[in-house]
Length: 198
Image (cartoon, rainbow, N blue to C red):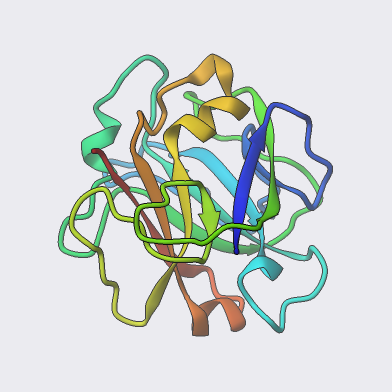
């Protein structure tokens, strides 16, 4: 049994996990930028309680930002793991009152992400999008000191929620790593996001 992430183009309610669009980032939290100062694109926001036992309600979120421009593929290499880093930024933040969007390359469409309990055995060949479960790597395993892989996102599943933006993760797998202590402490720097292509 495992928890699969189900992606759809349905509009999310505030507090739901979702992909694309703006982010409920409070005004006092700096919008993430690339090394050259370019505003990154919001990929996904998830409720903090998915990851932290002591986080209640929807007042804390985990958001993933990536370098991305529609119709281009150079972000694939920028998202791969190199020496424990990629150009993606993962931010833990209080859930703000209003949506913000500060990237010229914004993913304008928005899709909902839900958890579905699957009554099947999970294993290392299960490439479903999922929360926790058994690691399923397309390439070499990634190990991050003090962190665990908490989310896997199959690119084809992401396309279901964002059909006008197909190929953001190609047919690869995106992996979200979270620092357990950082999430419990509601810190801003709480993890990493990587892409592996098959």
